[in-house]
Image 1 (cartoon, rainbow, N blue to C red):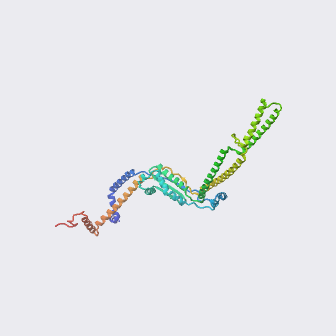
Image 2: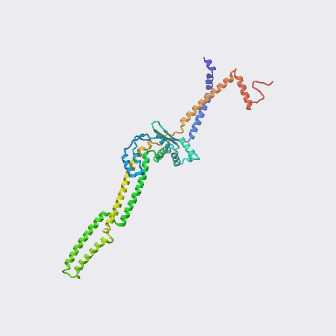
Image 3: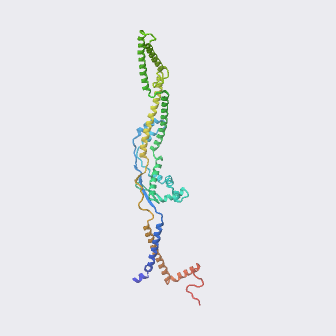
Length: 413
């Protein structure tokens, strides 16, 4: 039994390994030392990752159909389907593939490369090559449960985490500009109508400002009432002064000081009455004769201003409602596990590299021992030995490894 094992290929291979065990150990030691030195020369890499999801996989209507009807009536033919857009009806599943495409889009990666000036670092002559190399370090995967795992490998702990966070931020910015829902289309149309209503309101306010600065009527109703009260007070003073003048005219001459004083008061009151009814007034109160016309113009401007203000406020309310609906309807990435700087480097794993290379070297040494054992078995065999020695000799002569003057097994006589 022992003789059979010794003469078998396995026995010969084990014997060869045992005889060369010191050489194998030395070879493995040299490989381990070379692997250790090699691992020390490698650039260190750190990997940061983040887990994000799109909250609210389904959405439902907010019941804003009535508000959409009001906005549709205000806007008219320009936006006839706004009411229907507000009635979103049944819930619909968000398109996670859209978010994945945005996360891995060229626009997001270009912004990352430009922000961190990675063209020189990646040694890329063009942006296409830079993005291709960037994909070797960045990874975005979508799990069956709907979670996005974003990871990045970089030369620094902080940079790897910052790039992951920027990828999510830039993707959210792109998602906020992509029209992915009817609510967003309605919101864009409502924003245009709000801008038009705001311009119209500004024109009406400017007309009211020009009217007030031109007429001096800051508060027309209050100023009109005060003007009537002032005229009544002046007229009362005038009647009393005329009565006093009539009383003193019978007892005093026209040249007496008392008569002249009362006559001057009467004349002043009469001129004041005439000036405030038919001439331009330089005081705070407007001219009484022009008050009806001014009030009519003011009422027209006030009605126009209030109408445009009401339309503007209603459209603003509609726009805010559409923004709320859009926030529920539009996909947005929410971070579940934030990217933080890694404590341990991801590359190189020096211990793993040394053990791996040493194990490979040991396996190669065993395979080489097996090859040597099999070759010797062929050469030492009586049936195959002469043939293979002849083949090796012929090959050696063809490759100028042997002198062609003598053949193996042949002696000169």
